[in-house]
Length: 227
Image (cartoon, rainbow, N blue to C red; front, side):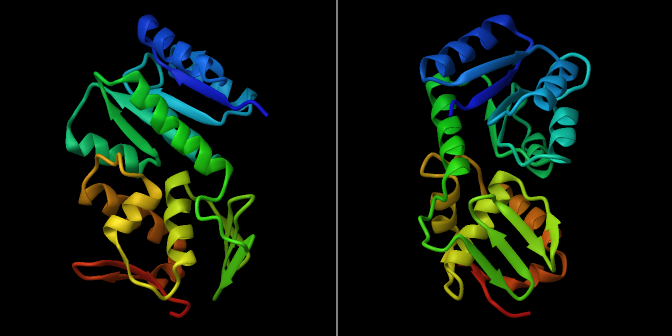
């Protein structure tokens, strides 16, 4: 089944370049020039990934990201000319999976998008089980469904990948480097604050189960099947 990429960009030239790259790789591409159009297209179509420019007319990219995250874990790559570190962290706090600053290389953007699309379609850890249940946490891998005490919780693509990696290594201390390679890949360009933001968001959503993820000082993390 063909995957659909929604490109949200008000600059015609940039939007056309992105469209050409993704179309040439066999993706179906939808285009939006402003926030209202982006939200409408998302609600009317089965979108596999969103490439979202922040500085767009009308409803800005931050608001678009926030509204989509309330109802979907569709992977989102944020594009912006702003390089302020606080802006990057805000993007991750709102649920973005990648943050790319302009100017950027279209082939690199395509490569990052492919990684998100591939890991969103398949389990990246190739575990034999389809689901895990630990002390009130239930994860169903094919549907990417997470429940806490039978109540669904909404995780972003990246948050789900972090939780799945930790659970598949239950009881083992995983380093931050191992986590980065598994979830983001070798091309990761963020820093400790990026990882900390995703981890904080994940723990907040896990609520009373958050302390099943232990921080191992100066090393990494460990998932324990106990509270």
